Length: 478
Ligand code: GLN
Image (cartoon, rainbow, N blue to C red; front, side, top):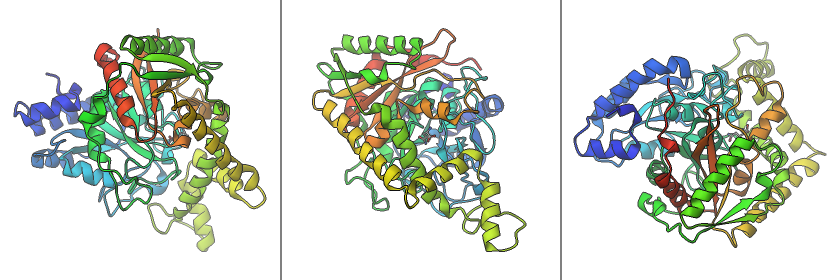
């Protein structure tokens, strides 16, 4: 039994049955991190001592002894949380995020904090303020982003599963680039308390795993109402068993024509159409549908998200957190120098775009208009869901691209999220599931979108799909 490749489900059964020792499992993964992370560079911080102590203490809970990696945008009490930004270097949160508290009660083992695009702004992890993570399937390529470290760590056997965050695709797109499963739950399903805010009306935490079943097991632990997040939905935690047990036979799946047009890589199209056939073979009915406002999603997102980010990032002023510029004349100069030195290029670009969109005279033309289009996008989905149980699309128009390829042109980078962004604007859940490989050996992801608060339908579909395919069982040679 190669411990690093166990699923969460297998590990928890072996641990509960006494066939596997939690310390042995954690040690095996720490050893693998030491061996492969110098190439993959998924981790910002590894905490071997903390991990082994947690493994020692683990007992009883549903994730007792299961080693996980956490995106460095989620606060863990007393341990450095950087958002991959120089401005937060050295920041140790005085409290745990709600998801961390819940994982803790479930007995998980924290291996470390993983890399990301700075403040989750990006699609390749190249915007990290520290270093770039490499795709385990091809080290010359990006792992996707912004949760690139979370996806690469799962794909490389450097954890059993991880948490990421998704504002416009940041869980699903890296999951598809790395050949693993990524779930963005419904907005409000998982508490954002302790998730460092990027765009508060879009952000959502979710699991990255090797199987859909594992995603359900983790969602069971982290979901449910939290009075400390005013946008948290008033529902109890979900049950993994119920999340996976919907009958998929007879379900109607919509294929939106706007997601299969220009810009879609032919090999990605082929894999996704093949996957749709597999779902038909499971008894689903597939039909073409239309989401007519899709062409406006990227523009709408980059107004809403930057506007919210410009406000959320005002708090990094050199006083309350992390970094402060060493030399300055007065208070104003200190703010300017701290923010100029602490933030990277993309974060500065977003703050400027967002401030502009919100400024007097432009608010109506940009921000207000974007809010109206957001409503139209949401209505498109509501209409399709009147006749469909779920919507099936590619997760990303292309497989993982080469490092550096899209850095010079932010617009090309922004287009990486063309198929994932609408889901966040509409607040609905979606999962990316491995559905094939290109001739170059790069993974392709299938995206399944569902109605708000209907994770059960998309997870049952993904679970059924994985029951008859084995794309998720392939491993990169590292
Ligand atoms: N890539 C998108 C962006 O750069 C989405 C990021 C995310 O989901 N956090 O904003």
